[in-house]
Amino acid sequence: DAKLPHAKVIAIESDREFALSVLQRIDEELRRRGEMFRKLGVQDLAGYKKAGGTEPMPRSLLLIDEFQEFFVEDDAVAQGAALLLDRIVRQGRAFGIHVFLGSQTLGGAYTLARTTLGQMVIRIALQCNEADAALIMDDGNTAARLLSRPGEGIYNDAAGAIEGNSPFQVVWLTDEERDAHLAKVAQLAQERGFGAKKPIVFEGNMPADVRDNALLANVLATPATKPPADPKCWLGLPNAIKGPTEALFPRQSGRHLLLIGQNDEAIAAIIGLAILTLAAQHPRERLPKFYLIHGALAGTAECEFLENVAQGRAKVSQGHEAAEFIAEIHAEMKRRADEGSAGDPPVFLLVHGLQKFRKLRYEEDFSFGGDDTPKPGNHLNEIIAEGPPLGIHLITSLDTLNNLNRSLSRKAVSELGMRVLFQMSANDSASLIDSPKAGALGLHRALFYSEHESRLETFRPFALPEPGWVEQIKTTAI
Image 1 (cartoon, rainbow, N blue to C red):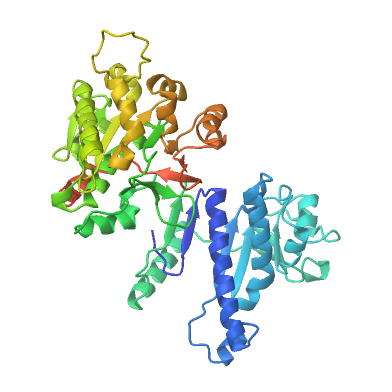
Image 2 (image 1 turned 60 degrees about the horizontal axis):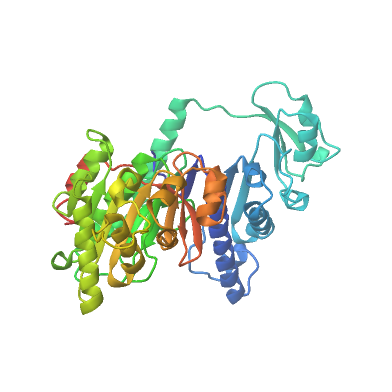
């Protein structure tokens, strides 16, 4: 809340992947500073200043609470974190980059090399058992096991050697004192012109807020003058220091988006925001055509949001006109196939809860003539197979893998090249993306898989936007 200007990244309830991306960003800064020092022929920060280095080189402090969480699994995240932490700890001091690691216990840090901890000369031990005391200091220094009073600790700046022990009492700040200090720093920052750039804040216990999507805000604030080469929709904020997670819709086979799982709010948010964001990327005279078929229950926040964003932008149905919509899109697809589609705006068919619409299910054709009635489900499967190169794309959601396989043909399922998975069984996850990773997803998490880029990333889906935000941008993204 204080928006301190010197806090560049703040992570609350962080994921291991996000924390690893912070280490990667610091490693990049370490390498950048190293290259600058080499050009000046200096070895450390003091030498850089004496040599007349002109670029400001502020000291940087990395603080990681419960750092052992990096190493709860022996996987790529743990291996990458161990390598990066070792390099930052060994080399960082010379470049003004320092590390502060905190943990309730070192017992679980099996893959963090003792040689890395050995590089950390300053040790602070609070009350702990004998095993942890030896790990924090060294094997011959277990004095911390004798600590008994709350807030009592031992400061040691001799790499844990017993002669470096210095007992102390941890300072205590009341909430009022803490808030007063934070307010003072924030006021100083404002007076001195700091803080123009917002810190990166990762709140893992909260869904993503669409207002934090700077790319979308820029699109909404700048009317498009020409259609984009690759229209995109943003799905949420990533579990890494990078731009928001996005799905691209170039005119290529397989460029459809499947949302599968039972997070109704996040699914409705993605579908509704897709209409807003895709419209905002096109000039008003070349807007895409949107068809929305949704199964949200009347009176729910999801239904109100979908109906609101679609108003004036899309043809909308809760299922009654579904067959007509499919027939209309199918006819447009055939026309484009015959006449060409280069000058035509894209068409987006958005089906929320496909499993709810029996008329749209694929039916095997076992007839031997006599029934030439068009089947909407079969036409939908043709649209999936043939539509993307002609600028016709599907964004659809289903609740389970079983219902996906009941609703679409096997060939159509294979054409859904972009997939968002919410929490599900590891087996279903493996069937959909060749990885069981969705089986371990927590609250406010999803996976995005893109077959075209061979990309799999975890992200936080956007929550339903506040009605006031939707009303505010309605006049922009039309």
